[in-house]
Length: 174
Image (tube, rainbow, N blue to C red; front, side, top):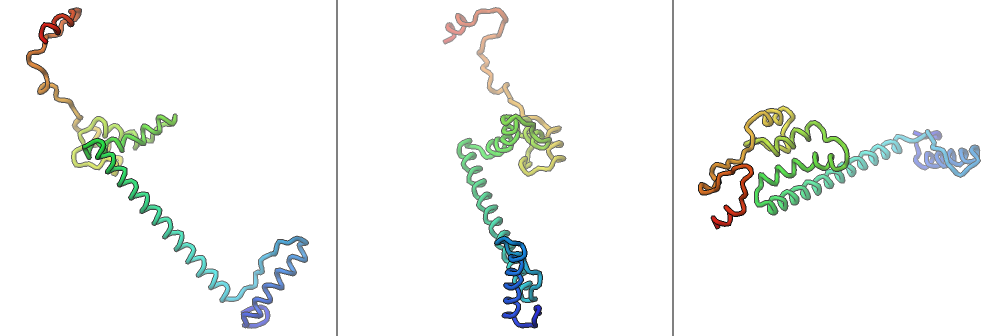
């Protein structure tokens, strides 16, 4: 109900009169809000607020989906460039810590852990990007990435002797 009864027209006229009186009293063109509204006005405003909130959530969800799609495309592109999905994942994990260092700030503790695990730990069956801090700590304490040089060494290679001139010996072998 309104000042004058239950009529919506009367409520609208009351609201208009209140805003005109408020302008006359204030002396400027800024109308004051009439606090005497009908239940229908309050309900309409509640519904409008709910619809606005739903639209905002829907818009944010759409933006989130677009961002996820872009992230997946970037991950796929990085995997194609690297020709190795694990290498691409490890490079993507290193990027935030590297970006922080480039910008002159310190990476967070989790970024440092993820970077160290990505660069130094075996971390089998662990999604480094989604791992918790405790999982990263455990992986960091686990087996290290190693280069197995023994398989790639040339058995006919010259023995290194400090101070020896290598250019002549290398030319003889070629």
